[in-house]
Length: 80
Image (cartoon, rainbow, N blue to C red; front, side, top):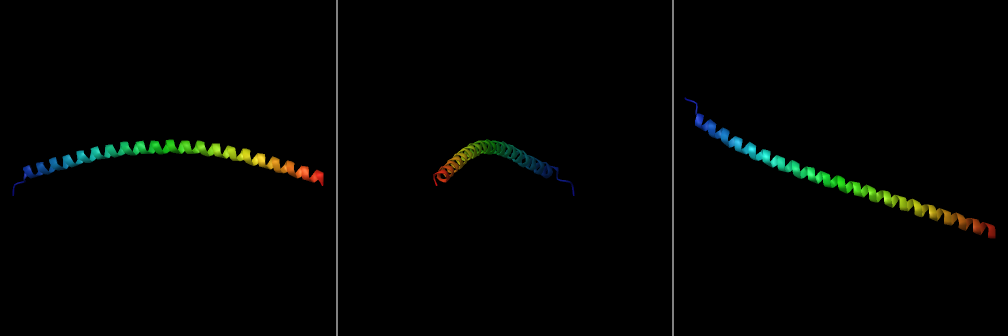
């Protein structure tokens, strides 16, 4: 039995086409994932900024409330 070089060559060519197609799909997938991760990190940065702003406002309101209640307590204690 003689080796069938034509069959082997056709199999190689078909496999080569499939590999090239998969490489293109992989590159496309990597580009999309990179962009998605970049968007996620950008959004996380914005969320961190927003949370820091909310935290500072909460501290300001809490401090004001404590000062108000302390003043109210002192005023009531001196009137009684």
